[in-house]
Length: 318
Image (cartoon, rainbow, N blue to C red; front, side, top):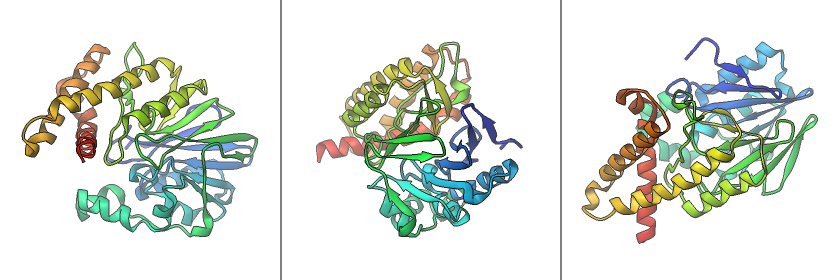
């Protein structure tokens, strides 16, 4: 982690590196509207001190933070919610209706993550997950909005990556905080052609048709920019969005091609096919990183995407 995890990105928005696993993997955002603020995404419990240090550095009183807003309840986006809400006494948690109960009682989230990673790795990566008082939770439905000072935030239901996912349109920046709906675009993979964007099919709720509909829904708002959790601001999102739509179809075709054969080795076949596909796409995009550097940048997502496609294939058969 660099000594300065904060970046001013215009429109009174600060990008905050969450310090999860490696620098440049996941971001959250401080958004300011006059004397009021909102935190969009929280990172993990380990991110909470980084967010609070920024507030102190800016001279922002904790009571000025009006809203905490995770786009969905996957732990790289919402793991820090409980700890942050404890530290921000005036804040209301704005969350998708399908995710609210998991913020009030995160025991299932914690059990699921611990089962996947093991207790030691879970503690290292995620720290802890703390419950939120139900009286401080507000569910945000499609079309709802709030004001942060003089800026309006509009909420749009965007399933496909997860059924508990919304995206947030900000009137002042004409930008959308996209969570995982608008894919991933890591800075080291940006070339003269622009950001290298890819869909994320993290288990267990990948739905390709719903995801494409959600991407089109965001593009129909004609945003000037996207604020990705993974990672940072992206201007002129129309062309990357069209690429993203095509890649969702490619993922489906890749999964269906890998499906025939021994069930025991299906995940391995999916990972191999996903790596070959993404590495080739990156090369076509002009990415000149070495194979090892590409693996470092994309290996985590290759594994998660393959797991998500495996679950999707099993659901199709089920």
